[in-house]
Length: 245
Image (cartoon, rainbow, N blue to C red):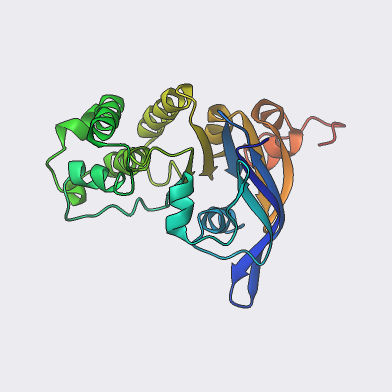
């Protein structure tokens, strides 16, 4: 059984339909990338999974629980945490308090929360150094670290990250990718939305390609990195003559 299963899901805003019959799976322990150009519906899918946007049809399950149509707080309680595009930190709160806000719903006790706080500070040492600084004073990369760490403080079963690399220097993206691999080594599953296709395919086990609100390709990240269509459309590599996608 997949950890997350999205089956034939449609969704949109008002009269505008954005998602058309989406099928997507995340297996336990996997990093799955959702790739595609800007504006094709990737963020809309994450908003639909997290309950911020209602499904119009289809089914979303986490394990054996049907979560489609649940409000966001119940989706969080079920174990899905959404790190949104733009980080959305509490700007006037310090780093430590931002992280503790991620644990607001937990009922497993103070020692477990302190253990996880130590873990994210070990993962992102700069957050420990800046733990008493307001989030508004952090650099863009540090804010992304804080947003991811806040998501981890919720002890999720699935961590969804929208636009990991947006606006960040390559060196910071490499640092964040290395941190996600360390997190994944603990067994946490992730669904990562990313416009930087090379970063996404390097990071993930499986990938889904979205075009105009539909999944058009899927498979192992390695196979997609070698796919002539992907290499031409997203990586800027001209296809070899006579080789079909």
